[in-house]
Amino acid sequence: MVAPGILLVDKPGGMTSHDVVARARRAFGTRKVGHAGTLDPMATGLLVIGIEAATRLLTFVVGADKTYSATIRLGQATTTDDAEGEVVATASADALAAVTAGRIADGIAALTGTIAQVPSAVSAIKVDGRRAYDRVRAGEEVELAAREVVVSRFDILADRPGDGVRDLDVTVDCSSGTYIRALARDLGAALGVGGHLTALRRTRVGPFEVAAATGLDDLAEARPMSAAKAASLILPVLEVSAAEAVDLRHGKRLVGQRSRLHGARAAAIDPDGGLVGIVERRGDDLKSAMNMPEGAS
Image (cartoon, rainbow, N blue to C red; front, side):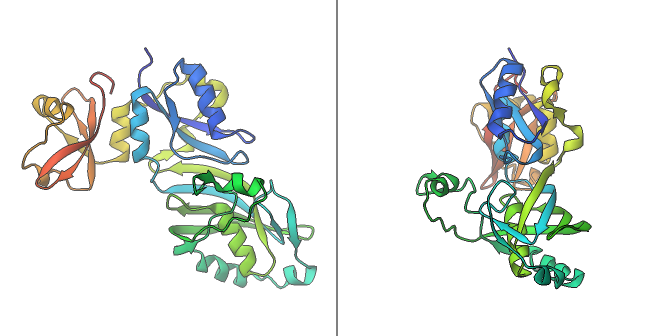
């Protein structure tokens, strides 16, 4: 039987996240594999993969903050807000020449902090039960509602003028649900020259870094991180006794133990270092929000 765990994978370009999951299923000989947050086929970088019972942890990873390295091309707008779409507008040389470093800095400042962002029309967001990108491909007009996201860092690493375009290499720290394509689109629109994404790499998801990820060709030799170790990186740790571990696994509450939990949730770790599950407050008590099967942590 395959041991449950969390595997960090460095996704190459040209593959879907589902393709990576399929490769992991073959490598580990199990169907029970999932991921915490899709990457577009064009994008590369970190996918957090759950194997067997550790897939239960993924719901606590999905909402983590993320870091991306990206290239924004100013001077062209596309149908998809990235390089995979058709160019629908090209800025004049005069308009592009009028884009000063100061104007770019102001545009980035306006897109930093808590902002209301309209996702790309070709995103995976569901509209009346269907993915937005499916509706767009079917020729429908899709208008998505703005959503609040947080961009805590939006730094320019390089500014590279080209032939009729201007490429900005950037690093972005952001909340879950932020679309880097939409940042490129909105920056280009604010500068009056259009913009889209030509490269995207996810380098961090919460506590997990792409530097520790396994390449796709090395999956068969990869050793997933234990569920207990992964959970202790994602959340604060609550050490529980053997008796408390049994109670939690059987759905019982730890009565009057609210003060032991300092955050919203914690990873309950038993005396053997195994993950019992994720606990949260219920009134004055602590109760499992998710349990791991015994011996699977």
